[in-house]
Image (cartoon, one colour):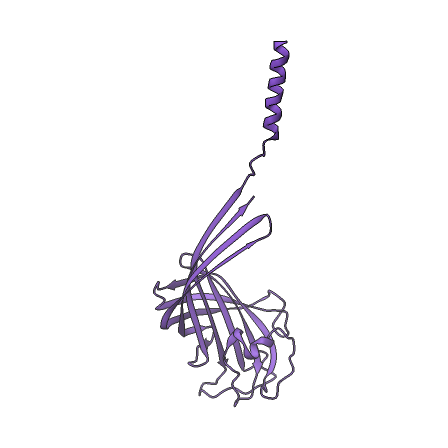
Length: 247
């Protein structure tokens, strides 16, 4: 009888333990990153040795006017990834496209194969080339006073985009020198933002802070210098942290 009682008592304890709620397992992930981010844009007007603008000619496949913009991301200390586009146009010598690079104006139509010329814009769009560089030297002052992208003897690739006459997509057209400088102007602006969202299972939080400064530009990209009033950029130092909690 005692043996039966012990068995029943043990069974009761086991059932009671099984009836207790099981603690939910929780996973947690957190990551951090920091670095520098830069962007710049320009309008290039081709000129002859006397400084006069070159006319639009069918024999000049890349046109006489070029609108470009590029983004720069640090990948390691002193090195950066550069990616951008150059839109090639033929324009009358008495017309200058609006400055703005990839941030508005004529550049909004760069992905169109042959946009219809607007009455106020007499230029003919010829095609788009890609600017792509990996492991490009980048030195930048922590105060965002000064930066140099590239340097003496450094080159960057210009690639086709499949847009005639610019070669096939990803086709290397030429390597050109890059030695571009940025001079900070104005005050350093600071920004901070936080995003939080959930998909019902996981909760995500991301925090981003940055220091930003506008910049004037000098130096070269290929045969091009950066004309005052037709070029500009900005420098940013950022920090980002994110975390994910899953139940």
